[in-house]
Image 1 (cartoon, rainbow, N blue to C red):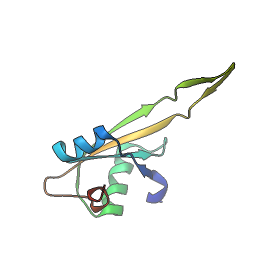
Image 2: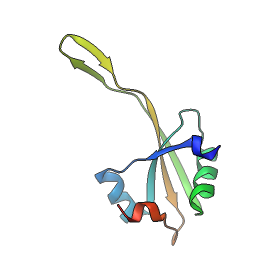
Image 3: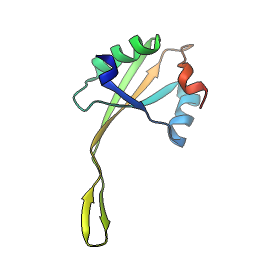
Image 4: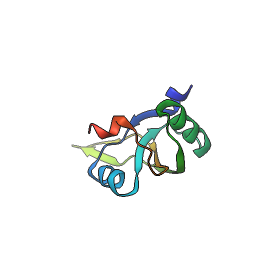
Length: 94
């Protein structure tokens, strides 16, 4: 059940800086998931305590290839703030 909520980690330059400065990690989550479900999923899957969860719905950009138009998919991102002293080992290797 929790594996369906957390889809993948979002690893970018900005998320790496936030991880080091603010102890936050970013995940792509299911579009139907709310903050409470994301918090429970992260705490269960990674055995950490979560302080705060912020979610963002990102709309896909419209892209053009020649004369045909296409659209990237819409997705939802969750920025999870961990309690002080908590770490997710998966992100430490990156």
